[in-house]
Length: 139
Image (cartoon, rainbow, N blue to C red; front, side, top):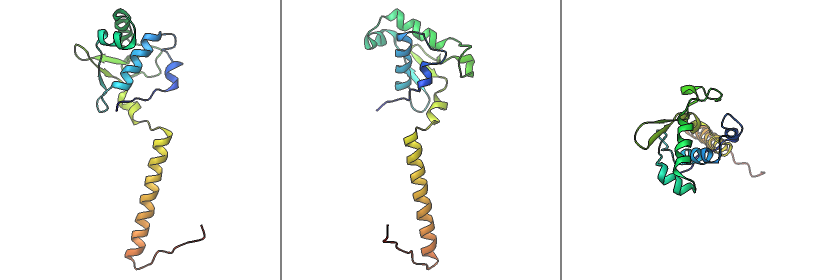
């Protein structure tokens, strides 16, 4: 299953007013980028059919996403969002940065697991010292 995180700041930043096709192509990039390296295949003819637009609009959207953006919040590569690496192969510049960001649910799950591991370590340490764990039935 492919998915990507869309942050609300995407709609209020320097892309504001860029047009529906730019946001559709960018959304496609985010949700279809390879998880490990952030590469995505963008064939304008295929995307036009998939997104219900015309090839020229999709090509313009890709060109926009490949262009420097001096007002971008991200200054990596002068605000360029994607870089062409092959005929239809592109790489998302900030893929690694956004992939590392955890959602609230992921963060809570991570913290639950770490706390469980900590409790298990403490319990194992007590048992290895000959101390029987106490049971509290009053919960």
